[in-house]
Image (cartoon, rainbow over all chains, first blue to last red; front, top):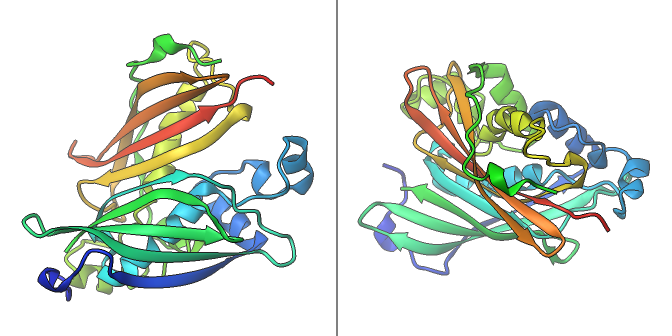
Length: 140
Length: 147
């Protein structure tokens, strides 16, 4: 059981919003923690050589940060039973200023019988939606 | 570009990966997760878990180990330098907990061509030492064709 009363929820209701500052430091840290050392995530010269505008965040870092809005809401990360995203746009991370990722969660579907709520997540950087169909199913 | 005949192919199960408590803390910091159940054993235990639990996307670390075998497979013929991550999903039977010994086994669920590009979907089943399913990780990679 959680503190959430499923009967009180409404589809469309916003559950929260978080702003993350992604810096080059964040990318290096994620590379080390995940083992994804693709140089497009830390070398400008390499990123440009493969036709990118610059260094971009690991999609999996964006995905991992974005779900925090649902985790914060339910209070227990173990209740995220299903989480999927589509990577629609890269998040370019400026060497000096980084990038701001704004994540918002809304209730997309309520399955009271199975006590599962679907949270639809929007993730925006530089005015672009960087994740598509980002949905987390949360066991209440 | 991608050999369509590998559709349905299942690769060998990876060696067990022992999930460390500090690894979970490190990964949680890296994805900017702040929930105390990633860091504090007592907080995780208060919620009914044996030890700290991993963030919902930690299974990517395990998935990566089985992806290595398909990317190294000459038959599959996937040029990693042309790969873009298209989508990703994790279906959890339970959260990953520090102390878990996890193996993973990857199946090529589908290979589709999309103009000059190819889309390959992998399904990785992650099991614990008791052979119970912990997580199914589904990943689609887009392999860009030569320009």
